[in-house]
Image (tube, rainbow, N blue to C red; front, top):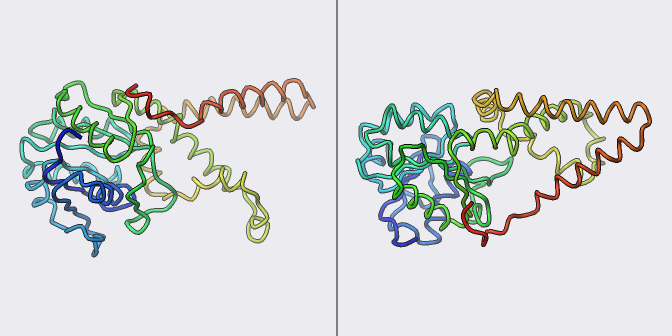
Length: 283
């Protein structure tokens, strides 16, 4: 970062927000880090303030609240936010913040959406880690009216937390995340519903455990995400259903050639999930 932040405010000290606060403190990215979270009594060394005070105090404000709470939070901070304050977030969808900023913020051009692709099925401040964003991809998704200098500054902040960044529009981000995250979660939820109860699951190997881990995610959080992006998720689920039905049909017919071709194509496409080299720079 070209210069250290003065005052960093974090709204929401869950897994992501707590990790932002801890990482910023550990890396010395801000002179002061403060936060607000009505559900947290101990901020792990981070001073807690009411939302209006935090909004009036911060130079950069990170919104780390569930999608269902985002509008209430933006409405609550808007009258108190300084005109020169930068705003970013961690939400799994980017169109909602872009819309809310245009409606409620005095300087919406200084609001730059972000989405770090980091986390786990665990939640809460107890699960937060200063190293959560190290090597993780992070979308920077500014609306068309965003101030280029604000975009650069927010991107630099996420890079200094350890993430490597890619820029997309909010619309591009939401369509892509239906493939990368939202539909896979829905499919994992559906598969997990058919698992046997009790002792049998203790015999499972790492394959099932790796596949099913995301099905343990918070139900309220993921209902909000899936419903907010339902059109795009439905398209991806329909694509999955066609592929699954095709492989199931090959299996029923005993068609080894068709099944092998489908598996080979899957192997080829999944190879692209190998870690991205962060030295490649911006994309």
